[in-house]
Image (cartoon, rainbow, N blue to C red; front, side, top):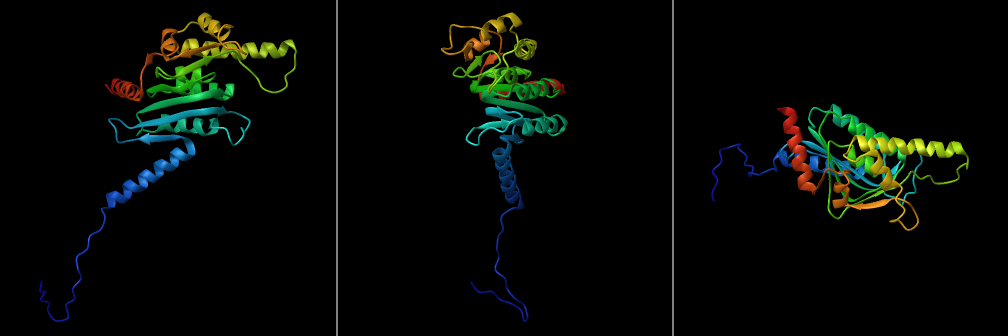
Length: 246
């Protein structure tokens, strides 16, 4: 190819650059990955409605720091997130995914109370396990789902370490246990009496009292609303969002 140029005219070969949108997309992906790494949560804005996904995994950490080898959900991370989600006009709903062994009772109840008090639609999904204080967290959503292979352990309040063997200690345990029973019964279909029976069952756990429920039985007992998977939970959340907008 012959290029004819006038005097004092220079030639620069054509070149192409990557669209700016691609760079923005890469930055957005990096931000999401960093957010998942730091807090175990992500905002999904590319679906039918923008929703926030919050994961509650491992052991719920309260006032005492757990050993570094433990997988933990820190309540000081979760509580500000919930406030930000409730106040964000861009986020239309919240999906809470649980795979937890339980943990600090007061921290778990604090998170559950915040979720139950949110005006935005909230759907929970129990995967793997939603044990101990994970039960109030699961029922705190507007609608709750559990996979058939997941389990939930219902048992009385426990405390690690040295305690005083005096009547006041057992009174404190009883009051804390009643807070859990009342919260679960108010946010699910199970009655307080039936939930207490599950907590004090002596025929299932070898070294403890309580009950292990698989997904189907958790629904039959009235603790969880429905059996389902991720797609069912998201479809339900979209439906609740649309009902609120209509």
